[in-house]
Length: 83
View (cartoon, rainbow, N blue to C red):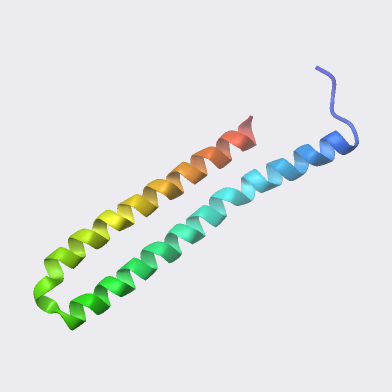
Protein backbone atom coordinates (compact mmCIF):
# COMPACT_ATOMS: atom_id res chain seq x y z
CA UNK A 1 0.00 0.00 0.00
CA UNK A 2 1.34 3.41 -0.95
CA UNK A 3 1.58 6.12 1.70
CA UNK A 4 -0.93 8.95 1.44
CA UNK A 5 0.35 12.32 0.31
CA UNK A 6 -0.83 15.89 0.30
CA UNK A 7 -4.57 16.37 0.05
CA UNK A 8 -5.36 12.69 0.70
CA UNK A 9 -3.45 12.78 3.99
CA UNK A 10 -5.17 16.04 4.99
CA UNK A 11 -8.58 14.53 4.26
CA UNK A 12 -7.76 11.46 6.38
CA UNK A 13 -6.56 13.68 9.22
CA UNK A 14 -9.80 15.68 9.15
CA UNK A 15 -11.84 12.46 9.08
CA UNK A 16 -9.96 11.07 12.08
CA UNK A 17 -10.39 14.36 13.94
CA UNK A 18 -14.13 14.21 13.29
CA UNK A 19 -14.25 10.62 14.49
CA UNK A 20 -12.41 11.64 17.64
CA UNK A 21 -14.80 14.53 18.36
CA UNK A 22 -17.91 12.40 17.72
CA UNK A 23 -17.94 10.46 21.01
CA UNK A 24 -17.54 13.67 22.99
CA UNK A 25 -20.46 15.32 21.23
CA UNK A 26 -22.57 12.18 21.71
CA UNK A 27 -21.78 12.14 25.44
CA UNK A 28 -22.62 15.83 25.82
CA UNK A 29 -25.90 15.35 23.95
CA UNK A 30 -26.84 12.34 26.05
CA UNK A 31 -26.02 14.23 29.24
CA UNK A 32 -28.18 17.17 28.21
CA UNK A 33 -31.06 14.90 27.20
CA UNK A 34 -31.00 12.86 30.39
CA UNK A 35 -30.70 16.07 32.42
CA UNK A 36 -33.82 17.48 30.76
CA UNK A 37 -35.69 14.24 31.42
CA UNK A 38 -34.66 14.35 35.08
CA UNK A 39 -35.68 17.98 35.45
CA UNK A 40 -39.06 17.39 33.84
CA UNK A 41 -39.64 14.29 35.95
CA UNK A 42 -38.82 16.15 39.17
CA UNK A 43 -41.15 18.98 38.21
CA UNK A 44 -43.90 16.54 37.33
CA UNK A 45 -43.52 14.66 40.61
CA UNK A 46 -43.55 17.96 42.52
CA UNK A 47 -46.80 18.94 40.83
CA UNK A 48 -48.47 15.55 41.14
CA UNK A 49 -46.84 13.36 43.81
CA UNK A 50 -49.36 10.52 43.43
CA UNK A 51 -48.09 9.90 39.88
CA UNK A 52 -44.46 9.55 41.00
CA UNK A 53 -44.26 5.85 40.14
CA UNK A 54 -45.51 6.32 36.57
CA UNK A 55 -43.32 9.36 35.97
CA UNK A 56 -40.22 7.61 37.31
CA UNK A 57 -40.80 4.53 35.17
CA UNK A 58 -41.31 6.55 32.01
CA UNK A 59 -38.28 8.72 32.59
CA UNK A 60 -36.11 5.66 33.27
CA UNK A 61 -37.15 4.10 29.96
CA UNK A 62 -36.48 7.36 28.08
CA UNK A 63 -33.07 7.72 29.71
CA UNK A 64 -32.21 4.16 28.66
CA UNK A 65 -33.17 4.93 25.05
CA UNK A 66 -30.99 8.05 25.04
CA UNK A 67 -28.11 6.11 26.54
CA UNK A 68 -28.47 3.45 23.84
CA UNK A 69 -28.36 6.02 21.05
CA UNK A 70 -25.31 7.67 22.61
CA UNK A 71 -23.54 4.31 22.88
CA UNK A 72 -24.34 3.60 19.23
CA UNK A 73 -22.88 6.98 18.23
CA UNK A 74 -19.70 6.30 20.19
CA UNK A 75 -19.26 2.86 18.61
CA UNK A 76 -19.79 4.22 15.10
CA UNK A 77 -17.30 7.04 15.73
CA UNK A 78 -14.69 4.64 17.06
CA UNK A 79 -15.18 2.30 14.10
CA UNK A 80 -14.59 5.22 11.75
CA UNK A 81 -11.49 6.25 13.67
CA UNK A 82 -10.05 2.74 13.56
CA UNK A 83 -11.06 1.99 9.98
